[in-house]
Image (cartoon, rainbow, N blue to C red; front, side, top):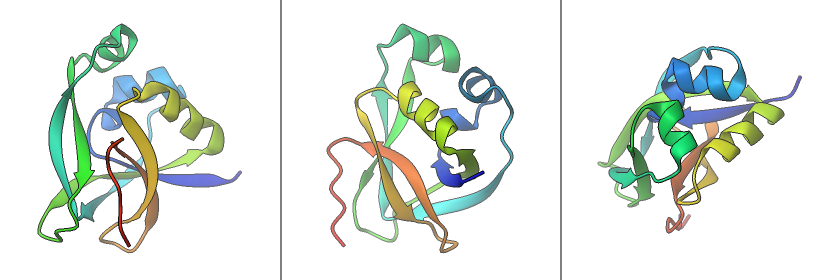
Length: 118
């Protein structure tokens, strides 16, 4: 089975969200994402609110400043599970590939206005 790495910095770490989206509890490893800052986003999708239990979710935006760092967990997902994660995230988020502090390349959901300049 092909797997993808996904870096989560909040609600996809919740067991209830994992069970609702993937039908299983995920095992992961702690990591960090430099160069991004976190803010909060009001969620209006009732299904997402019901699944997470929260009406505000964190969202990250690229700053390029290595002093800005987001802590989270890296999970291994199947391609189908990654598509389910895409369906869970509201339209304010987009999925991009990033390099974590550990050197691992992973997907992460960021603010749709984020432009990463490399």
